Length: 348
Ligand code: BGC
Image (cartoon, rainbow, N blue to C red):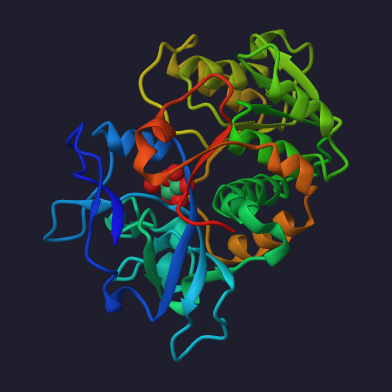
């Protein structure tokens, strides 16, 4: 079969190549790939900045935002041939730490977790892949290709859960939420926040085009420019850019008692405040800055329900480009009008 593979930490090594059929030890469910979403993490891996091959191997099959069709459900699953499934990304560490031991692999304490297509386990950018039945999430068949949005939806389902759990530390009635960054994660955050009794604002660099349209279609308010020019202090900020100055501005602009959830992974940048200034702002306003990564099965289950309930027309506008596997390099390019680019392996 063919797969998109890379030698992690070595830029320029990604290729679409012949690759052995998936190992039976990878799971008893055999799946035909339908589509795989591309995200910033994939770009980082291809640029040689992130990623780990499986132990003893040099190359890693890329891809963690999957959608596939069951070819063979194997002996121990309730799945049927033809079911649409998405593979859970993370596996608990082998020790296991206390969080992994209770199924909270997203909160792994010792960093020895593994992740498909990212850390030590092959991903889903291959014509066929295998998965353990308990890590295969069945998706509503009426979602079709939109099932590929399940993984990003799990990330935001966890992030918002964190925000609302932290909110319970005191009397809290959030009225306004700001999402920074109108990429797939930011837009899905806006979608989920707009389902609540809360005024939703989204900020991004672009001034026109699909992003503002999608935000307005949710009944939310779109802003371009600086967080400091919003004209109000949000109760919740879901930060989806990973950009240093946006994070620093968010800390300055958040309302008293407000919660900032960081979901973006960035690097460097010029902070507009020093660390102690940031800390003082957080102290004096009782703020919580909470980081959120990955998702456990509870989030996957809820995200599946949320995706199935979402407006299909709106969701379908998030997928702005579909590329063939042989054109994966184009899929990894960031073009101005892109929101979610997917690599399509087979028809649906
Ligand atoms: C993935 C997560 C993963 C994280 C860190 C993200 O792109 O969506 O599942 O935990 O990268 O590797």
